[in-house]
Image (cartoon, rainbow, N blue to C red):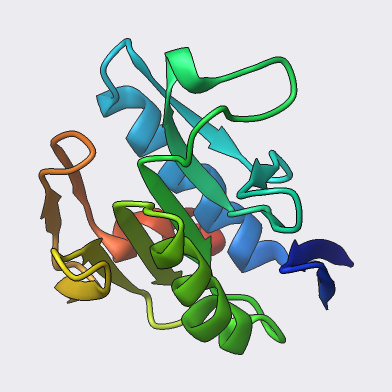
Length: 163
């Protein structure tokens, strides 16, 4: 079980499976290879404390190196990434989306290893997320933020089945 807290309420979701973990690891490699030296790519269970009563654990995040403390972040990350897992889809697509936007996390990516697919969201001037890309299979997303990187959902799940 994964425990997170939103406005003082504990939210539990089931532990993710193989496809989720493999996709997280593959995306972490792609992001780390492209990240500039002043940014860090971190994986769960690294806590993102968004006030005294909210702590989430995105599957991946990108943060400024200077915002990292010994056990957390001094500022919201630049990007939060959630990979779909059975029992967590509603939490990722609704509650976390609202919380991340409310706390000014500029980028939010949702990935699905089953499709495979990637939806990239960015905060607009009103503080709401707008979809900037939806790619499926071998299509590529050319991200500009938080740094330039190309991501193909199909490439991220290539290791799920032996050749």
